[in-house]
Image (cartoon, rainbow, N blue to C red; front, side, top):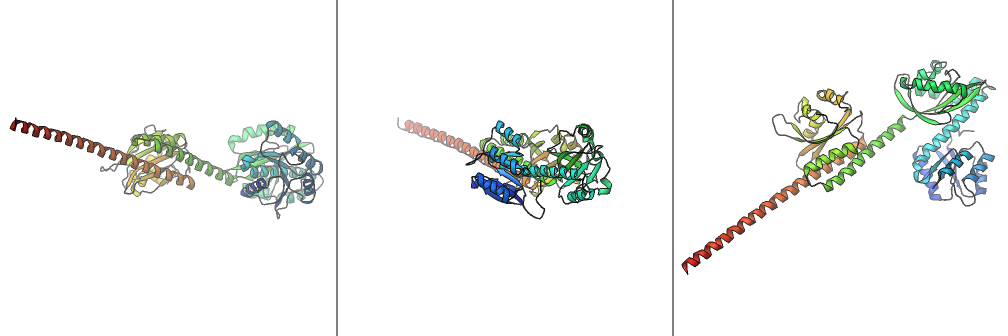
Length: 480
């Protein structure tokens, strides 16, 4: 398939009869970082004409249209423009229809209520088309010079690799040099799995390659897989690999297109963590409405933070005014295993008070510890936290208008667990919890005053009755 040149936008032909749906698809593609020019048609004749004149790089087709359906569109493309991939974008599709579409030549399908999948699906389809182009380019190498093939591979933005039947690298483009850190001279002739695969995966990958080299088949062939790879400096990073099989001189070769998805994974993790904090905030706010006692509220919030938020442990501490300025635990939940009884956490300006909890109480500001092993301030608690699987923590002050009431401290099982969005949501949770504590205390004080007033009124009533009786007795004795 002829690929879109790097100096022009992708051409996307949309076979869609609802303009708003087309607009939503364009929005999702742009949000996914895809630069493109789009053309929308609704009818068979316009579709056939656009295929010839617009020369799209990909077709996004609805399944039901005024004078044709998805199967008709696939037939037209397969007959006249077989090199153009088609992705079905439809409102509803049964499993049977989906299988039939794939068998008929659709490269993927996306439901309109899940358009967030559209950009990744288009990228995967185009990556697969690139693999196909690389496979054909490899076959052309039998007739053309190896230098021509290297020039084609060098123009790609993704890493393009080729392995011979022995698993040795025979093609290594410029993008691969940038991605993995090995020059072409360093990589050619090396065993790919030994060079790039993390040690824990090498045995399984070698077994899979042994099967591939004799059959040209494998679980990874023709698919886009997310894997881990190693750079020259030993750092591990996530990749997306699209693999294709090529038979050259009666021996199977593997062609792979590799994309570094570090930033995508980082964004996915940040979103997952923010959603975790948002779910926790929502659940805790429900408990704030229901709680009638302070101890009930604090225990419930700690439980929800662990069960819904997925944190390792949570606890609430209140500052004592003793000489050591002790932080007194009043509620906790999760994998605590005696940690709080032996931690000796203080809010004094001392070694035992300079951790996140003590500092948050003393300064009234949020304190984040992203790594127990790396932070010098965590030295007093490093061994105990390591035994319990605490890798990072955050301390959130519970502040009233006048002072700091206490602190909510959370522990996570992974380092660098608290990004900016998550910290913001957890800070909102702490503010809501502090408000809940003040509300319950105000309510308790109001009830106490009302009870005292009621008792006082009863005493006055009894005193008045006794006074009236005394006066009556006096009058009776005086005037029998």
